[in-house]
Image 1: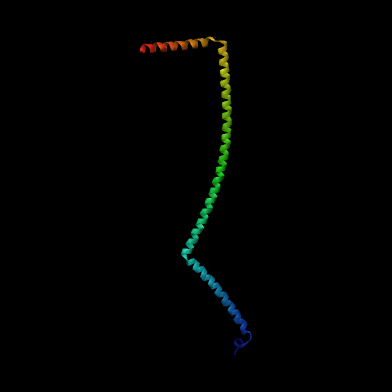
Image 2: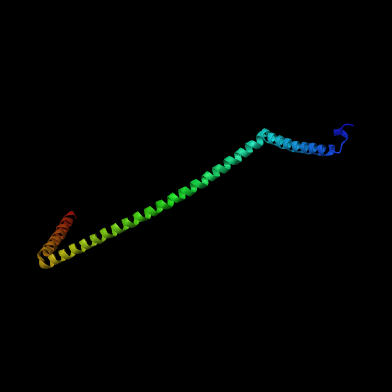
Length: 140
């Protein structure tokens, strides 16, 4: 026998070769699985659909959060404007009431100082009532 075939060094080389074969088989198995995964169009399509669903859901969540923030800002701004408008209207209403009260007090004082116009207004009212009664009496 030759030195390599019959010597004691032969078994370790066989073990090394067997280890290399095992590793090559494992790598080959992984490569076959990767190729099978790429060849499985249906599974890849499902995976793509799931990824798209995830992206759409995430986009929807982000858009919802953005809109909520904008709505909150708009609400705050509108509340501020409503408060300002209410304050202005209250001020204008208060001024209008004060002006009306002052005008009424002024008219009251003028009427007290000069009672003649009230007498003429009362006389005109009586004259109108008399005219209406006369016209009504003629129609019958």
